Image (cartoon, rainbow, N blue to C red; front, side, top):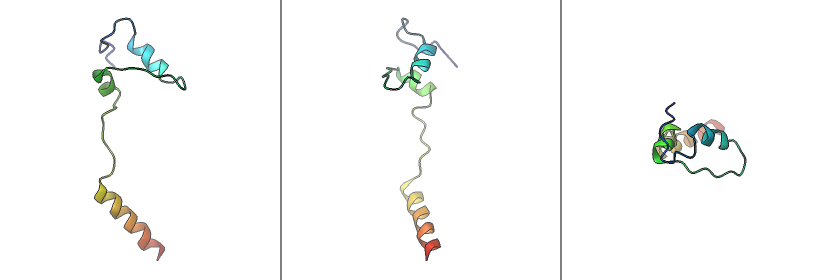
Amino acid sequence: MNTNLNADDKVNFDDKLFALNIPGKVIEVTVAEAQELGAFEENALTEDEALEASDEIINDEE
């Protein structure tokens, strides 16, 4: 993992990762850090896929 994504040299990327595990702790990350952590990966269902899945459940119950 690239730890040189940090715009703020005072805070180490590894320290931010550790702090993410502290309940209630708010951590600011750069866009590059967020991308490195997978924050912008989209793997949700489309609306059509969700409707198709719900139709299958309804049809199975009948």
